[in-house]
Image 1 (cartoon, rainbow, N blue to C red):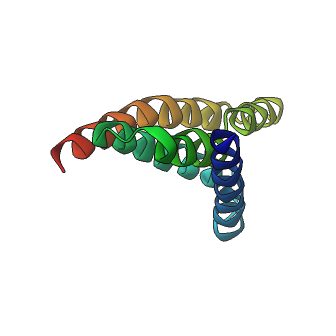
Image 2: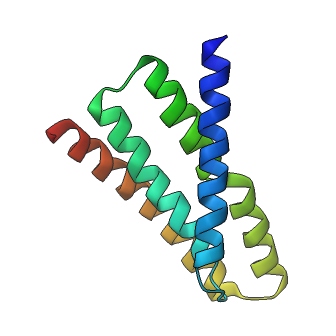
Length: 116
């Protein structure tokens, strides 16, 4: 039962953090707020795994917080909007930045997590 509570609390904190980032980031053609949370979230999740964090802290931080902080569904909705608005260069840039950047961020976090 404690696991459910930890995931829920982490999820609440992650969702509120994502909302805060979205309110702070400027509006532009490229959805920089979602890109920021997804890249930062990839790095932080890599760091958590690299640190070897397990158990209740993992449930709170990785499953709860990072699961709610990052957002795959918003990414896809934003891509569809860009595509519908014929912002083809922005679609490609957003995809490349998200997926290549996400992989590099996760790998960097993992490496740094293992070194610290």
